[in-house]
Image 1 (cartoon, chains in turn green, cyan):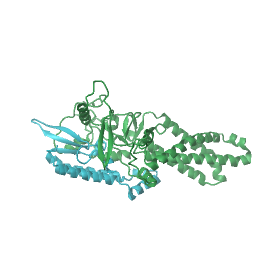
Image 2: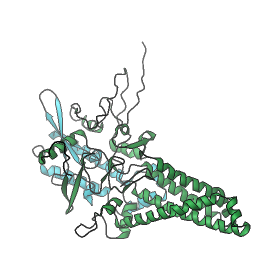
Image 3: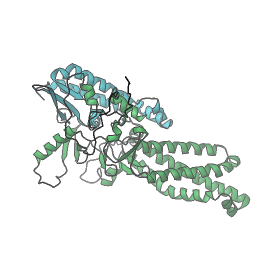
Image 4: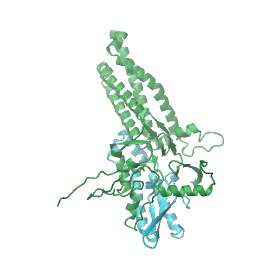
Length: 363
Length: 125
């Protein structure tokens, strides 16, 4: 008698998530599909700083102060950390409606408005009263949900994102509720780093030119010219962007709202999210509480189901009442059922508690 | 669903949940301190520490489990934690007993009830 042990690869939820995202490190990292410009950003920052540390810092540390490369290193590390945090984290993607909920809402929409076949119905708006304010929720036809206030659908990533600011190709991800502060700190620290490197490049060229002349200096360290050029162009764009976002943070507005003019104009409501106080707005946006990701990327999908239903609903109710089979209607028709015909296999372990998984996925 | 559960009980549950969410999203001294400390450590501190929000979400999931066991399950209902629906809706599953086997149908209450369950976090503002 022989015992066969088959190690079955577990399917995690990120593999079946709809939307145009790429995932790395088994679901821990989440980015947009087009990453080319992100690699360019990385290359520019790493390249310029490498040249700066290799050439100018060696001279300036000796001639002026060893604190110069130390501060540069701190700025560099901080901006890299915030860049990676912005690029790799979930911006606040709202998971799509499950088949049951989607069917229910579509039925409601169909009964409420007679729409001729083939034509797209007008955007559905649901009015809610929250804390004595009427809030209009728009229906998203792709995600089949009523979007929370300030959420918007990103057409590049094909997801609804909470407190959607904009999709940043330089960072390779959307900027939303969960990564806005990292994005702001990234552009702020990058501005400071650019100004720092630019200034000390000028100082280096000035100091060295006094000794060996301007052209000789440039011949000795040709990298200086490249650094100055990169810093010059970066300054105009990044510093301007930092200024713009500082303005938005002070008013607790998003880029999306600013472009659409949601809170400006004669007949519009004033921004209800602003506290009226610049300091309080900044504190809330940059140091406020950070909600964890509601996309359970690292949760394990059960083998029996075809992957569109998370195991958590069965997990909580299994101890209470018997389950019926999952609905046959699926939102994503391109999902193939797992091949469960392998013999003598151990079922994958069920996650203990979904919120813990979501918290774990962040780490 | 009004026949399955008393309005007051459900309202109380939703009010308690809204209270929890308000606590999670409260902006004050402790949340600023946490935010500034995290920023000072370049957010590496989140590798070892749980945020205040995550702690409250755990409390919420324990509360919902408790409510399900004590109040909703005896009435054939099941409350799904809003965090599993993207914090948009509070889903109530109604279990119907049909002849041969148990089957389930679920209805979601996206804030159409008395207290706005939908957008629980946003409602705290």
